[in-house]
Amino acid sequence: MASLNHVNMGKRDNWVPIQEGPSFQPRKLKVVCIGAGFAGLMLSYQHKHGDASLENFMDLRIYEKNDNIRGTWLVNTYPGVACDVPAHIYTFPFEPNPSWSQFYASGPEIWTYIKKTSDKYKLHEPITLNSEVISSVWDDDTGNRDIVQEEADIVINATGFLSKWNWRKIVGLDKFKGKLVHTAAWDTSLDWSGKRVAIIGNGPSAVQVLPQMQPTAARIVNYARSPLWISGAFASEFTPEGKNFTYTDEEIQSFKDDEDMFFQLRHSIEHSMNKFFRVSIKDSPEQQHAFREFKAKMEDALNHDPDLCARLIPTFQVGCRRLNPGENYLEALQQESVTLQDEPIQEIFEGGIRSLTKTEEFDIIVCATGFDVSFVPGYKVLGQNGVSLAKQWKDAPEAYFGVFAANMLNFFTINGPNTPLAHGSLLAVMSFTVDYISRWIRKISTQDIKWVILSFQVHDNS
Figure 1 (cartoon, rainbow, N blue to C red):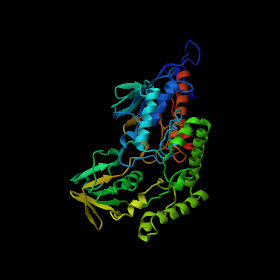
Figure 2: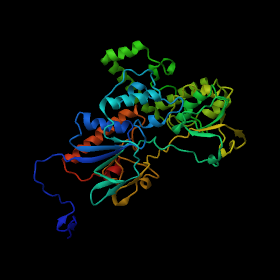
Figure 3: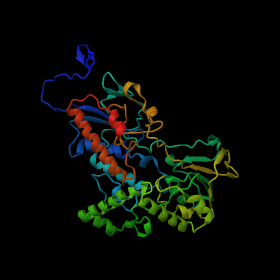
Figure 4: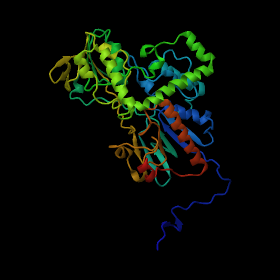
């Protein structure tokens, strides 16, 4: 009867060499992280300042394709860009910020906060800017990953799911002779005063940018294929009238002076956001209540206009599409200079847009068409036996804890598939994920592990 363990050069495949020396002595791992947004910077903090520093376990290099850190808050600079998560829970866990000027922070204020935090803790030290990774290929023989011209023991994908922005596939998009701009690549010199503007899309960026452009644009047509839930402010019990507000100087000073009170405030806001996940559970009482409440709020905001209500208020359940606070969006749509167009776009021509029954001329077309949210990285990733991550995730992206993908040895993802996106602030989830990956780095380093891979048993049962 043959042995269950194959023999190779006189040694079984699972043979482990005996090494002289004390147990659990760490070996320095070469760790490459791709992306220097919030997630990459949290890893940089863990490297030097974490409760259990990783300096003895790894040499860290973070590659960032842009010319600065700050991820999505570096590239998204369109008018009105802001975070719809309360600012006091949209922070690094190690650097609460009592100085937020508003309950919901603007993009520029978040950008400044990230820079100040990075400077304070020197989080930029392991980062190489203007360096776009082209491929990450697992080498079965060496047990390393080849990163273009570099090898690493471990690769961490921290590029996020809002890093690859989408141009909608519209016939003639390249023929337009006016100004064509995407919200994720905004031209800050753009002047829309007195101009005819088309805004394609009604996702979060469109909902934020339209009210900013409406007061001075000559005319705006918002091309929106489907209805959307305008939910009002998240954690609205902390806001007057469910809208954003500015903190007074006295309030900000009290946050600085009373750490216990400030902690309790942040804890209460986080709890409010965490329990909101029940709204996303199909047919739950919370979802049914939210359906009725959001529908009534939208009807009121639209002044019960039967045409607008029919075109804008969804019949699908709350949570099927991302909720949007949408402050001032519905009000802006009702201005005389704004038109909602829900007909499919047939083509774009040199002077404008042609839909099913109408042809409109524009000076500016704004594509607020979002991002590729397929979770597939923007670079080639090959795993065991040359398996392609892009092909593996083409139809149904899956990852254990949002971190481990099948067949991808020593490859970790932050904010991958199955990440609990509906459970409060995403930064809390990032923090937990970085802690989890850090524990794996210590384990691999101290137990002389060559590689780790997700077992099919765990994958199939998770």
